[in-house]
Image 1 (tube, each protein chain N blue to C red):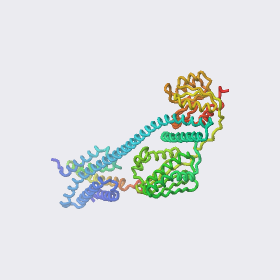
Image 2 (image 1 turned 45 degrees about the vertical axis):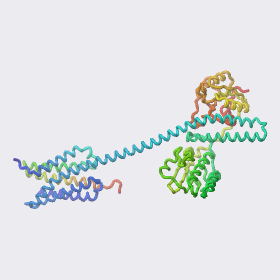
Image 3 (image 1 turned 180 degrees about the vertical axis):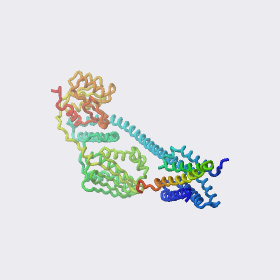
Image 4 (image 1 turned 90 degrees about the horizontal axis):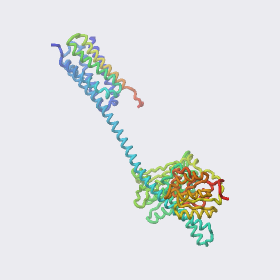
Length: 94
Length: 487
């Protein structure tokens, strides 16, 4: 019996669902400014969540690092999106 | 430090930066997305904090592990909610844009519909007016020509001369009245002689002409109307004096009607750099916005049966013919300003050209083709009294036969005849005798002049009723130096 943690499995499944929904709604979400950074952040998160599930099967140390590195990268990518969208200078100078 | 812990602290720092950016620029996210994104950052921050603490302080406390897992599960759920909110906002924006487009299209459609109805009414009125003008002008031709003949023939005693003069004057007045109907179909670029007008005396004349109206109102109702005429500088326009007087008179009458309890009417003229402005201002009852928007529509009147709804449209027509515009400002209880804004440059171009000196012909052989016997008779008599010889024809076929029999110096031709259109007859005659000028004398003369309609084979068009002077001038124009058969 593989050493899955139920919570981590649930998180990974939810994450994959969010990613699927995001890709499916791609044409609509394409209008969101700088959406590629948001998408990259979500992908990084899903990679991290998936690694947290897989670390119970093999390469525990490596995949554990991948999990934490991916979630950190997700936060950094989200910060980039915030910087480019929320803190960008107003185009009308207002 | 443990690399995993370091990664989580980095993630927490980035998330705190996101929270800062969110506080600064949350308005850009919109009302639907902003709270969800705030929740996402909050859940993320808690999750990063708990996991970072877990990996920093080994072994971690049990409660920290619980919070880490709980917020870890919440995190993708809130992410889903965030993406869903973005999609919804996108749809809402798209729907709002389409709603605005539909509203604009609907408004445009409504405007076009109103314009179409208005155009239809104008077309109907124009057709009606053209028919009335044609028939009425035929009768006026008989009256005008006969009265002119009476006066030209002489031998009348003073009373008879006076009576004939009055008939002639009344006929000319009637012709001028009928001609006013053409205001509705006259083209704005129609060339007509204009004169340079000094506005100060013209406004004074307008005051004099309208005085009976506002004084009689004062006598009838006890309402006092104070009339003021103001002229800044010495403004001038180049235009049609009678047209301007008529338009101003209409506006002053409207102002009087707007003052049932008395008040002030100001007639003001001033020159600007590029424009001359003439205003009729009253402090009367004014109009609401809906009435103001419709007041230039022909036949729209708030005066019930006493109003024709033509005063303001005619005034607007005057302004447009002079290359300008009529502006109406009004508010309920706040009076009305009717303002002509007339461009100076345009008016300068409209000065009448110096008339070329023409040689008045005599002894022409005139072929007169008209199906109306009365018109034919009086025009023939007029031509004879001018020293010409006239051959009459009562229709198209007869006219062509007479032309072939010759000699003919000029043809005067009606346009509308039972056995053929004047346009086609003119073409046929030109083929038969290319050198003979053709004058079209028609009750539609004004209309044809208005729209620039001159049939290709026709050398001149004159409207009925045509005075002796008009006939002679036109013959001089078309036969200037080309008299062929007279001897």
